[in-house]
Length: 287
Image 1 (spheres, helix red, strand yellow):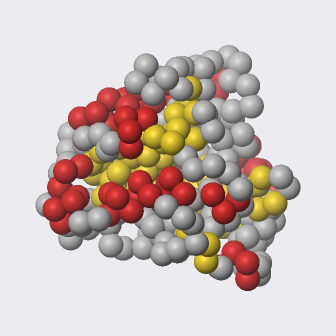
Image 2: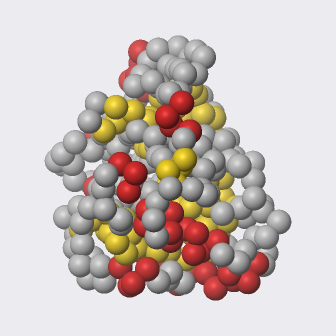
């Protein structure tokens, strides 16, 4: 049981909605202040759930806002929802990110020949429980797949909650097909087609869509962790907000008073906004 508390502000499904995070009496950044490892010896990683399974709202860590709360992505002035590509409803896993990682957009990956996507590394958590938005919990990494999304390398880690009943049986990527037959194929298909209803072409993959194993995934995690460390010491990080409550030198720290002020200036929570019916319709995508 960890001590992180998610704090809602604003109305869900609006541009003003944010989820902030608190540990003890301090408001923190979930990107910078939550450690990468929940248990380094056992290689259990902290995962931040941005999007619970079966939901459609495209929520993400706000890397360009102070304290990096979770917010809903906006494209072309509209809140972003993923389409239901039959037979899938919303996201088919608990979807989120590993803290203290960053896919450097200035680094061309030698394996994928594409730059990073400028975000923390993504995680698809495949356990049976539907996680809560803003929940932080320990996971085992089983492998990864490399999506090439609009010309950028977008690693998708495959993980399972350490507390899931199947966690003891799933120790590497190849175990998934034995105990959850068809799930990896469904994952690949979901990423291939999910943007087609918006008028975009199907996504492509590095390695011909092959899932890479746990050892390979560990290397990618460590690489993106090192990129994050460099970002945090960069005197000119561009649009990225890198001040944290606990990590880094004093010059890169948010004081408790500054963090409290950011939270207090956010609108108070209220009822969820209505989602348009079109969000829940089915889209039938040809193979």
